[in-house]
Image (cartoon, rainbow, N blue to C red):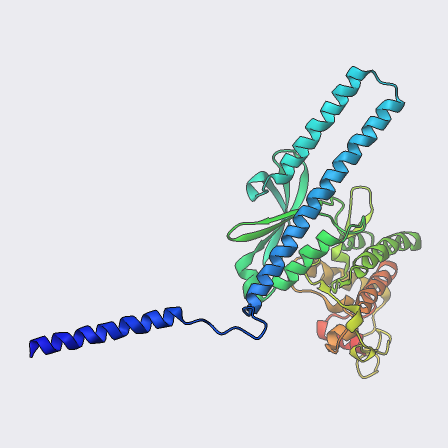
Length: 368
């Protein structure tokens, strides 16, 4: 009896082995073309790898071409200047040393340890901006430090990516420059140009109003800044005096691209936009005059008092937001020009065109 049971077990184990071998030898059916089907994830990874390799070698070849051009220019200048052969060799060796140091610095991976943090100049919902000094060179920059976990929790990842891409793509003297970006386990860092002149809101609070020539100068530079980002199919969506910064020479530069959005103009249609009637700020949403009438000086003082409180809060102001943005019925690049018009009005008059003590009343004035 025991012998029979042993034979049954052996037969069962042999059957299992045969089934496994058959399964291993089984060929996965292929499509009619004879090629295996790749998943979408594999295709995306392959495309990303291909793009990375192409860009890497493209940049390498471009860098090599630029180095050759610089050497050729120096040789031509030395030939025209009739410099001795020994001095020519010394100058060319000096150029080679500088080129080697430049390439070495390019290969160096930047990190937070390379910068000495100084004064904090701004704090937002999920990050802060500090003045910092690079330890190697002593150059001063503005470091934007963003907490990753907070960005994920608030769903702001795409906005931060758009900000970084815009700063990397757009090369304009009218917007704040991005020098480099890096990250660690907890934070994302953007090293940007430091502008010591303050912002337009501080200037307006100090001077009350600007002359027409001053307003024309600042509005002209803002127009160039907005045009430069529109050319790259981005809309800023947050144009306001707080985001117009001044450099040490008094020139204006646009900053804070945290709400910018890439826009494909070919997909825009006329039905996507809302045209709002412009009604004077002195009327309520139903067209009746405002009950309490104040002089322009009283309105200016009240606006400045409230604006100083807003300057230190994380809550925005709707005074510069276009009506189509508030109505949420689709909008395009026009919303940035609306904001610029409201800022120009404030520069000349002393307060925005749709100002009210209550933000909801301001929104009603804008949309009507």
